[in-house]
Image (cartoon, rainbow, N blue to C red; front, top):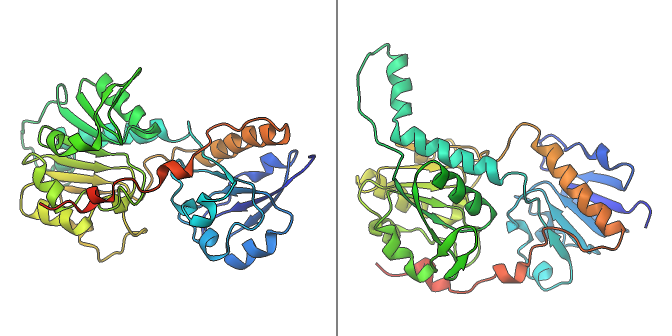
Length: 327
């Protein structure tokens, strides 16, 4: 296998990644539309997916693909029956955005506890107003989802002096993170946390997991941070809880529908931070994901096992009742 054909799906209107770095190893065809994708499929066994929101795989199908590498950690767009039940190998770009996302989480927790948004507003109003703020040290945080992003987040928040508990799909002891509670402990732990950080993937199990019932179980004044997937949170229920004064605020980098519509009320709340799904996007990230794919491409050509392979079957539904639990 000298120069395999690689299709790279890139979102319309977004810059193309520096795929010229792959010229020595592959023939790369960049596509943005369903027609372009379909036309490029003959003879292509490899897909380099640079648009995690793409619907092209659902609209056109995977064709003769044998390997899909995604530039994101999440694999939402690949969760189709045709792909899940196939022999297609799926890999992701671990190591690129986990730490930046964890830093973003730490940043918004600092913003809330130190009331930095109000400081900026007072500066703009040229108002000298002394205020007291909350400590970060000892703050109780619940991280829901101990995957790659959750792992980096837990380690960074603990390093900053916070007391962090973790909830995952099943209870276990992790050599690095320590005790991880199962989903059956989620509601109990929600009531103990000052901040709840969501780093969950979107599956049938997690869709709508944080609804009015769960928000009521959170401590009064607690804050929610979501860097997982938007549809894990029922947005109207979150707004209702914040408007009622139960939750103290939220920082959201992900939304059920992106980009967020200009008329969405999330924009207008002073205690909600809206971020355009950019928490993991450091300067130069597009080149880093190309380099990540290139390393796996060399392994593919050498008929060696790929790195960071994702088992889509394990991400399938397990306990859907969690998402619709009664109050």
